[in-house]
Length: 89
Image (cartoon, rainbow, N blue to C red):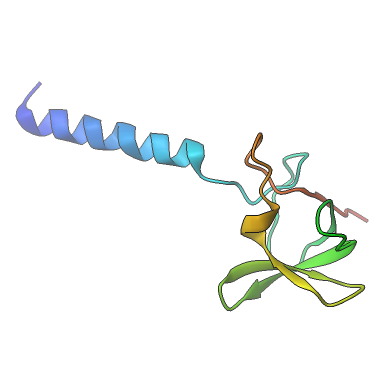
C-alpha cells in the first residue's frame, strides 16, 4: 500500500462516517420524502402538512394554519428520521 492509497482509504472512511450521521428525508416508517408530499406532523401541533421548499431549505407548511417549520426541527434524535408520517392515499 503506497502513501497515496493510505490517504485515499482514510478519506473514503471519513465520508462514510459523515453519511451515517446525516439526517434522512424520510418519515418515521422510513418512507422517503420529497417536496409536495403530504404528511401528518407529530410535533408543534401542525396537523396535516405539505413539505415545501422554503428560502432556507425544506419546510413543513401546516395545511390548517399556514405555519411553517424547518425540516431540521422535525428530526427525531434517536432515529435521525423526520417526526412525521407520510400520507399515502
